[in-house]
Image (tube, rainbow, N blue to C red):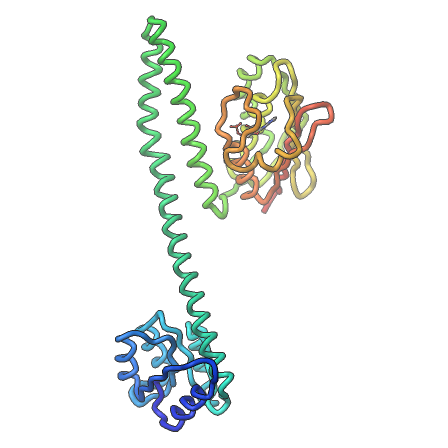
Length: 355
Ligand code: ADP
């Protein structure tokens, strides 16, 4: 207790000695400098602090005490007239305040115990926050390493392998090189997807501009023309032109992922239907396939990282839908799966026109 009035000090001492089941060890200092000196040698659980002392007056008393022992909870003792000061101290980190003349033994004990408990919880939270910050920092560092330091050497391996593949005639070496190529391609895909996912996860907002969804989809569709021809698949695009929305260029990834999956997870010769429907405030996009379909219990899980079902030897990272979902969410939209009654799946995306 740092309190200059001997009467008040004695009163509080008596109140604490009245409590039957808890034993308090009270040390009394009558000015701030002596109080701070005592705090330096530690072993104090809580400070009862009068703000008006001979060597320090007002809010500054609290500030100096807190700066001296930030880990010790402080209960401010105040007169009726300077309650505002005490409230300000509570705002700035004091655990509680007690108005002199209105304190009884029960209130005092409750306030002390509560202050100690609350401070302990705060300190634990502070520790968790620091740990979280550190974990986040490590994640950012790892993302950085992934997207630069890992990608560069793998890209070199890929270039050299491609060159050697063109030059080599030896069957055995060709097989080995093809195996290296398959795996480096997979590695590059994985690194790019994982760093994109990490980046999107830590973002709160995407920069948006007015873009034509129809145009974006057509560009994506063109890039899959060869893959579709190889599987003898047909794309029916039912939407019109000039479907404007405020979107980020990453929206292209969503179209690309849904179309790529519809191709990958459908048999040769089947068709894919795509539409972008104007629903006033938003567009409803769907990609419908007549493919292998998705079990009810797997639908929600597919949007979480690395979840792949029934891969059937199809290439993929298992991150595509998680990335697509995050992009849609950052646009204030929604993505979900329904069953195609004729066999296969329908992926729906709602994208607000402006948000
Ligand atoms: P990837 O295709 O790289 O594995 P995705 O996140 O894009 O990763 O997809 C996750 C999983 O969802 C796929 O492995 C596949 O099992 C399933 N899937 C996605 N789209 C379809 C679809 N149109 N039809 C059937 N299964 C699908």
